[in-house]
Image 1: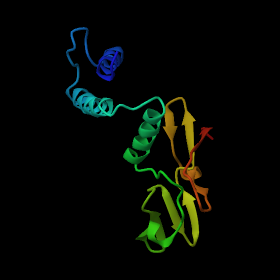
Image 2 (image 1 turned 120 degrees about the vertical axis):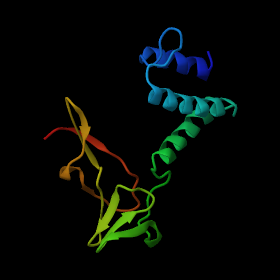
Image 3 (image 1 turned 90 degrees about the horizontal axis):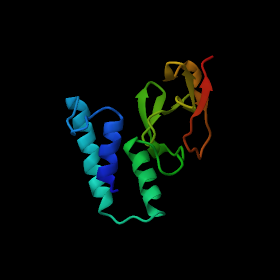
Length: 139
């Protein structure tokens, strides 16, 4: 089974297409077709069992605007977004205020309705820093 066949099988299992391949939602069809384009391209590159996970991990990070190497905290990484408040250009949820850097998404809370952030999500950090998230139950 190739990527395209696998994807269509999964789209059907998710309830997005019927047994005849007819889409149930126009927006879902658009997104799934875009993903199919990415899968078609990925399938042409001849990745092995070693390079495929590496390429997918890098793509996932870059398409999520996450860094692929640790943040350094060097001056070039920051842009001022408010008086004395700086945002990291390589990772949009890392800020610096009064000389202290922090990750605004360092802690993610989970409850029966899903995941969310709050003021308690902020975690002070030091450099070099590789962004990570700790999941905790809702306080």
